[in-house]
Image 1: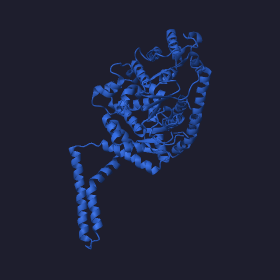
Image 2: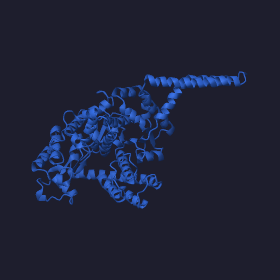
Image 3: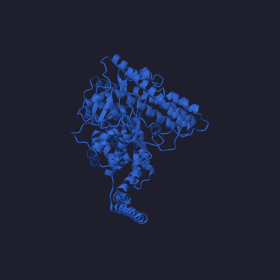
Image 4: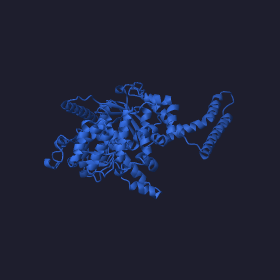
Length: 547
């Protein structure tokens, strides 16, 4: 499958999904970056205090400056963390597929907004949209409504035990609208069944009336934000920035700055719509179970090899039991609950993120394996490639890339780090001056020979390295000195050979070779320096099989 993307029809676009852009992983990587900044013991005490005193729930209460300005000015490492991954994915495919939850509940996408993302990719207004949003609604606004709201009766049907609120105690009618029961990763809040059924009657009336004819974007967004704040999970006006960013993303879809692709045409009848959604879930579940079966053996072999040591008093059978349970569970909250149960029984300390660099644990690997299978299923479900940017060495993505190279293409994590620190104008220059290199790398697919893929990937890595090369007097003087030393050594070798070898005119080839080596010595040293610096503990993994 080629990544040229010359087709203009959104339904036929060839795209790539990025594991790092899952809403839960966005939050995990956000928290990890903050913890890394704090652990470095920054010398500016005021900045360190600001970071530790600013939980994510407080970020969204700011209206002026906007969240992206706060991040850019105070926490450049957060911007670099996101930008490096975004640019790496863009170099391989200029159409990036996202689920609506990645936008509506993704902390990085909400913090930066559509305008800043285009700036980070060096795109002009005349350039084609890069982001493709996939959802089941008619548009992104409809996805927001589905994502955040449901009926009171639906909450009672799905959570009969957890509600704990008598029907007479709920201020709304069964058919009225209320909030979805879920965790919002970007905002750091949990809407429980009690929260959904404990709103004021005026809130139910407003939500229901507003959603009967949801044509006014601002009115719909403000009503949903008001309900979230009334659920007592957020202070008044504590989600003002979320409201503004939701509106910006919806306007971006309406103006064509991003492309929205509907996963299925929903029938008008409510019963038919419910049946279709159930069928979609069943299809996803079937694909999930197939991929889980496919990758279970790899995980078991890793654990049996003792790469991830088992906890004390824990047998491989205990791990396999948990693995078999989550391999049949396409709902992430249920799967994470099973892993948490295993961890609580067999390990001390629950891993906060599958992307952390702490000592490897089995529960960590189980989470990482499940996240990979879930996202691989999602990519397959949406007919897209999957790409993991800067997968750590102890992650399942990295382990799989070492075991199965046939359908996988890898790029050193050092390239992503260079792209992250690159100014916008320089990234635009890279895309323009290295068009052939980028085009050839994007053309790499499952049918491309491994040797060709390897060469093209190295070409891409070398292009990034060259355009970001730094020059100063000291480094240039050092480079010149090393080149002179190498040239002198080769000249001495040439002289010795000339004196030792017989002067019969047959040693002319050796003289020519040494002369050539003296001439190209600086370039050889540059190449060796690049080969030495291109290795990294992290790597970007591209899964070329879309099945």
